[in-house]
Amino acid sequence: MEIDSVAAGSCSKENQLIYKEWFEFADSDGDGRITGSDAIKFFSMSNLPRPELKQVWAIADAKRQGYLGFKDFIVAMQLVSLAQTGHEISHDVLHSDVDFKNMNPPVMEGLGVLMAKKKHSSSKSSDLNVNGSPSADASLTAHWFSSKSSKKISLSSVTSIVDGLKRLYIQKLKPLEVAYRFNDFVSPLLTNSDFDAKPMVMLLGQYSTGKTTFIKHLLKASYPGAHIGPEPTTDRFVVVMSGPDERSIPGNTVAVQADMPFSGLTTFGTAFLSKFECSQMPHPLLEHVAFVDTPGVLSGEKQRTQRAYDFTGVTSWFASKCDLILLLFDPHKLDVSDEFKRVISSLRGHDDKIRVVLNKADQVDTQQLMRVYGALMWSLGKVLNTPEVSRVYIGSFSDKPINEAATGPIGRELFEKEQDDLLADLKDIPKKACDRRINEFVKRARAAKIHACIISHLKKEMPAIMGKAKAQQKLVDNLEDVFGKVQREHHLPKGDFPNVEQFREVLSGYNIDKFEKLKPKMLQTVDDMLGYDIPELLKNFRNPYD
Image (cartoon, rainbow, N blue to C red; front, side):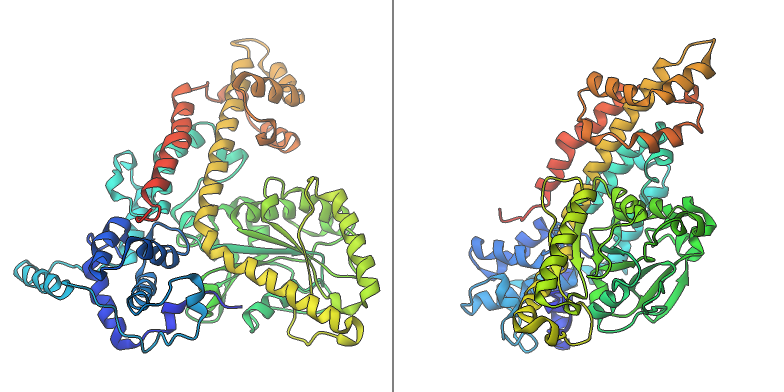
């Protein structure tokens, strides 16, 4: 599988040096990002019509982040050069037989004169660092999370959609989460690395359904620490990420690294962290997406008695962070055990991320495959409580050739088409990462608002002086009624409320009398953020040529 990266290896070193100078000139604030306003000024020198420049931006900013990094800028310049020679600009041109490596830079009218003026003026000033660097911006936003004066962050500091979300979180959503202990009940507070993390794909399934082999098939190489066999071989959660060299990092180390989005896993304790590791290796695919390999779901009592940590809780935590969740089955393991059912139930609220993969489908002939597919859909129908039919990809995702003796030529053609569809789904992940981040942020804001309403209502129901213990027990026992009252009082959607049993379990360890009363101003701030700030942010960082 290959992710579009035409700029990475398709530009000569000579042209890269030219583009580097152009990039630094166009980057007005030296933060390593060319925003829409920067692009309008710079791209106008190409003398291309506005519709063509709109298409250039749309293709170069494939991830819809609202800015161009250096690699994206090279793609944009190559597309401008193609447009100037009469080529039609479309996504297909990236996969055409155009010789990008030896392509001449575009003609930018008046650029040489402007750059000479800038060099002349900068030589008069002291050693000002005009070499834009993404790391400078990253360190700035990291400072926002540790700064005590976070409320003074100005809109001018924001140069991307993700930066805007960070600012909104710190100023408007985080105070609500802290006040009503959202991090204790639902999800840990977000950090800088949570916003900057690469998209993740989690693989779930019973043992020996081909999860590790699937990752190996995509990478066309084995990752450090990978074990494959018919028995339950992967006994830990492994995050496969990009890194400068091949190595495995223990879970306790990973959880305290500020540049990794796994600090929230510390809540599951050392018992889990000893069964968690990060496997790093240099690979072009891993520069765009990370994979989470999970232990095979066991059946019967083994799951509860032999794991020293909350497997379902960990799975739910990763599900909230992942962009795609693949449920793997094979023709001989179609039964959904009680524990697997609990795991799938923990994915509630993330139904749009779930894809089902019927792996090792070449082990049965065409007639048996039809029966297997029917049995799988029947099993899933009892577990996935959705009216829609889940998308099921059928194939054999390994490096071994397809067993045509069992499947026949029709089966081979089917598997190839299904594999292409699944790979297309995976290719879209980096492009949709920014959209997914906005989606998850809005979901979190709504969940935090509902949580604040529940907590403040519980506080309001407590007596002022006498009988507090009895009142608390009554509230915990009748939590379903409390949820109903809160829903009616604040006109909230029933489907957005948390799981009653899980909430009751956490609530029983707290003194309700210590909770905060309702602060309408805080709720209004979050409503304003959802109603005005986020739409305004998206408007500011859309295609500048719209």
